[in-house]
Length: 325
Length: 78
Image 1 (cartoon, one colour):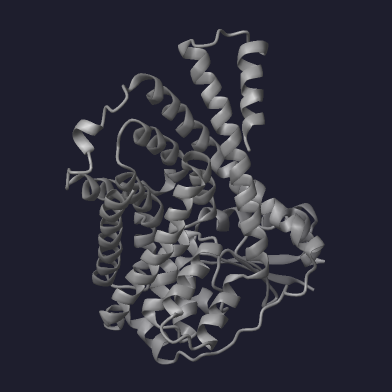
Image 2: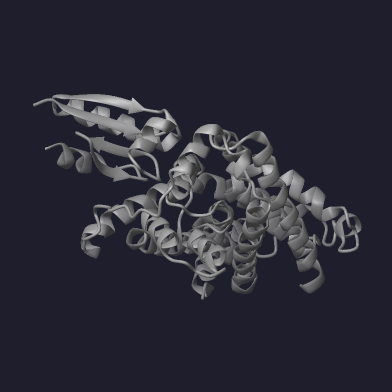
């Protein structure tokens, strides 16, 4: 599918710039041009597609759906699936949380959504397809959805309502399965497209610098780290590798777009894929800024339990991947 | 008649960029309006929005969860 990008990269490097084939610099440059072009195209496609889905299915509808329907045990899975198609801005996590609580949605179901939404987002998917291919991307999405579902069920059973901050408990007490009416519903696709387009451009502009730097660093490492370098330290039998990777990953949120290209090179140099996926889930799914914001609605104890359960689930899935893949 | 514009947001970068755009539109077009930033989460929740930033003009929620363009804001204010 991307052969033509390779042809353009070859043409630019070997013909226009007249660099020799097989040289260190020209190969690195070729790799950089090919990778960035391919990844930016994929990011554009995924973000645009998600933008369309989201325009027709905004968060208010998700809330109304979860609040209205009794799903007989499937509500965690549904919340988790909705999380995939709903873009997540950590600064919206508090209003979103309160909106769900007010709509009478159980706490564990809300958690399922809150876990999957950042974990499986459009930027991560676009980068994943570009860097690791479709198969690994599907594995990542499916495991992200299952992880959100399971962690939500675990959190539901821990009966955590008592650890909400007092004012949220009041909201919870007056919660009702109300349906909010929302405007801007009857727009045509033609009216929606400029708005979606503007959002896509804005998101891409925001992440392009990180992607470029990430791929550049990845390219440099590619050339200078010997093949199989990490196998000595981080092979599948090393039980500490997965937990250490996840714990390191949690504080790295803002640079997800830049970190993924680097991780791809690490995998190429011998880090097991499961360890790498667990690391990336930690980078993308859990962030300290989000934890700070959630302090308005949750006590420190609840945030600790929330992050603890999710971290544990990520570590377990890392081990599972290392066994399966 | 003077309009009351409220910008709901907990102070994230998107909220600040919305505030900047609204301020520009109001001053560039000499619109008679008061701009108020609502950053307190309890106040924000009274409007029942789940995604910030949100733009409220005369108590009507006009935009939520995204940063609008200048033209869009101008159209909403006229």
